[in-house]
Image (tube, rainbow, N blue to C red; front, top):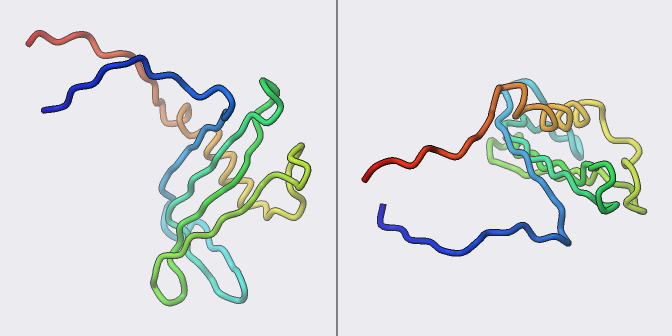
Length: 121
């Protein structure tokens, strides 16, 4: 492998964010902005702990999509209201479905993790 590492990695305590990223099935989500349609193919959802160990809130959804010109475009939806204490009004229901997918995806597809057993060299 040619890599060495040392240290004791730690999470930054004052920035409690978790991101979930996944590919979307083609044709399952179309976004419209300024009269243009964008076919989404990837979503990244960021959750944040804004109240110091309170319930986690969704901060933003970033969708990568194919635009009407065939080029990739990135659309960002800010999900927190202006006082950062709840959801922003007027967010389309389909975006909330993306958030729900992100919140449950890892468990739904059976992702679990355990440290691998040491392997003899």
